[in-house]
Amino acid sequence: MLIPRIDTQELFGKRALVRLDLDVGSEDFRILAARPTIDYLISSDAKLILIGHMGRPKGKHVSSLSLSNVAQRLRKLLQHELEFIHEVSGFVVKERVDKLADGQILLLENLRFDVQEEGNGDVFARNLATLGDIYVNEAFAVSHRAHASIVGIPKYLPHVAGMRFFLEVEHLRKVIENPVRPVVVIISGLKEDKLNYIEDFKKFADKILVAGKLPDFVADEKKDADPKVLYARLNPDKEDITVNSIEAFEREIATAKTIVLTGPIGKFEDPGHKLGTERVFTAVARTNAFKVAGGGETHKAITTFGLAKYFNWMSVGGGASLEFLAKGTLPGIEALIH
Image 1: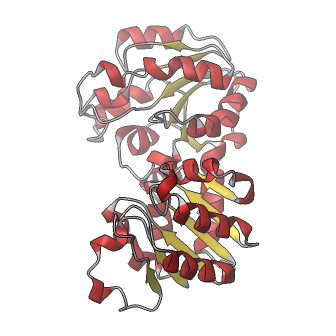
Image 2: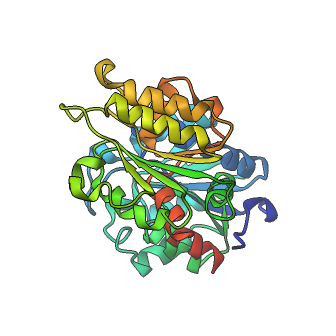
């Protein structure tokens, strides 16, 4: 898998169309993760056109989901001036792009205000491609989506991975390609669809620990069917796992040489239900294993308990990380390769 990298390109004076993940809520983690790529483009005297999305407006203009709401945060976090324009395409956008000076930044409106973004509309992708000389994917967390700005634009422009994108693939690849064993995967959180990844993860994992709300979606008689999968028992209020389950998880974690952590163990924001998350995450942090964590809530919990420095990699991707670990690739990666 040979992914073209941004630092192999001549960028001076070029219009760089940069896909970012701007669906960031109150967290700055994903924006800061993209900063090395932005800084590199600025120092290379490229002209930056930033594109991204927020929320699920379903093709409609929703003022609360306008990227004008993140423009000021971008200025602060990137420590660089940028201009925002309330359009995605058309004459006004093209005119403004043509006036960009080297090192300047222009942020376009929410791509999902146009229904063609999620529908992977070819006309939409081609119109966006006319704005740039090169396409940069720095939105790993969205690259499991076959959307126009992820898989459509690369058909019409030279394309590369951003610095963070490339590192995401490199670190996650270590888990599925000849990992140091035993490999323990912790799948947790609220979303039932995470259970669908268990079969794929069994191909490289030696033990899979399942917590959060997920055990509640599995019939009791099925929980002991596979010795490779350990389901936590939940407390009566279903907001955390039992102490016995915490201790069972700690024993498995202590033997691991590679650990993947996806999702909080319980409702860690509540002092009365933080025990599972705090103890399990601390147990992971204390090992000498190669440790990878993925997902916004996972990052939030790790940060809350002051454990970030103990992890080898904190992925910006939640669903994208799970999909990559399951399939070994993503639509956004395939678009860059081909």
